[in-house]
Image 1: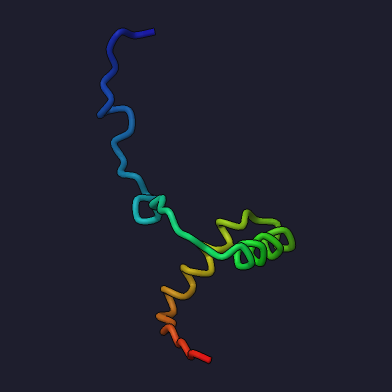
Image 2: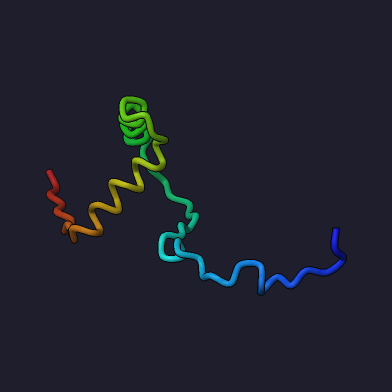
Amino acid sequence: MREEYDIKSLNPRKNPYIKRLKQQITINIDKDTIEYFKNQSTAAGIPYQTLINLYLKDCAQNKRALQITWQ
C-alpha cells in the first residue's frame, strides 16, 4: 500500500446526489401516526421513515397548503 495518495485525482467529479442529501432531525409524532405509517410501510415493503419522507416530499413539491379546522 502506498504511504501517500493524491486524493484530488482519485475522484475529480462532484457528487451528483448533493441536492438529495438528507438532514437528520428530532421530531415528536403521535404513536397512532407512527403506527399508521408502519402499517403502510409493511404493505408497501419500504421502511416507514422513507414512507414519511416521501409523503412530506410530495406535500412540499405540490405546495400543499395546510388547512386546519378546530372542532
